[in-house]
Length: 519
Image (cartoon, rainbow, N blue to C red):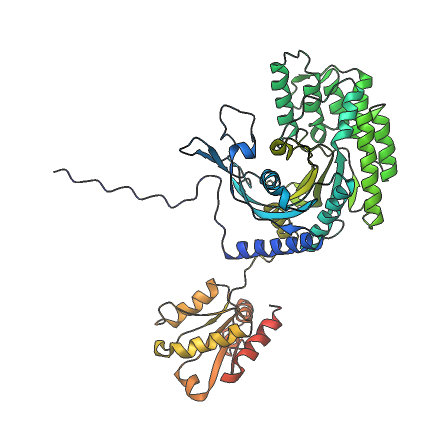
């Protein structure tokens, strides 16, 4: 009889695009989430925790591929034929929740939600398939006061978590203004409506597919959108060339232009460069760019109202600014859009200086709930990328790189475990994080190595002699590490970082050491 082969052992590795988070990372994120939740709650938003799994139908298409409904999400098919998927954001589930429970919810409904989302996309450096989002949305109000409130709350949140004024700006634009500019140069916008978040390029591809379906020959608007998306890379002159006759790229290759007239292209550039020193000047420039467009004028009026509402609360252009270059999900948003950008410089992996960039974004999406109810329901909201915000705080030195672990009570005599548990109990009751060493106590050096690996600030020692004399030894591990770096052997032997105190002063001495280190 042939010997059965053993089943291969599974590889101990995370799936591609995922990662594990350990103690300090988890607690730091939890602290940030509590801080953000505190701001959202102060603004009157209620918490919502919805299911991590939705039907694919409820989520809508994440990528434009109707033949593969699980494309872009992690999805599976139930026995009865329904497709289910892990949520890819927190907004689509909100639309389902509101549609399902609208008769029991107040109107407007103001909610915040925090948690992981999953996207089945190609991972890359710093780009994972699972990440955290923090959302706040107002559903059921068409007032631009709701949009202004979101912007103000976003600015307050950044400051509350540790990003000071001058290191961030919330930029505001309006989808309707761009629609007005395109209308002014003879391009209709009715083909861009969709119900999922898209980048400009994705919106352009969706437009192209719709044009093919409708046998529309002209694709001028597709190309205009693509060139607008290159504004940050090639600048004003580059986009002007791309909108008209074309330009040579860095490699010397010639890129054919869209073919707009100089006057039409100039109007698009006027929109992209409308930002001025004051909100009033910016609004004047935008009115000039939209010409006679009614929808464009409506968008500029909304921006003016937002600027006035924010100014009344003390939010000036040093914190929140009207910026026409903000273009977010053209097929998703229906009105004001906003983006929080961190303006301080960091060094990339090649040592080059660059701005940190965007950490949050959102806008008005009045058509999402309509998918469920058949009736338009106005909504606006914002989503903060928690992992990027944490990375920003590390860059600013607002998060300590070294975790502070618990006080470790060492074990000198395993038969006296009750004594050590009594010590740790007193420390915990005093609000001090502490633990008893539960490994093999035979080698005392290993206990101190354990405390070091736990980043413990203090070790408590009580051997037989200390017990008989009613004292304990308290070792300041932080000070000891500092002394070890510079002290001579004689100085180190003096043990200035170790203290002997009466047993009943254990808690007081530990507290004194922690306070001295600001812990």
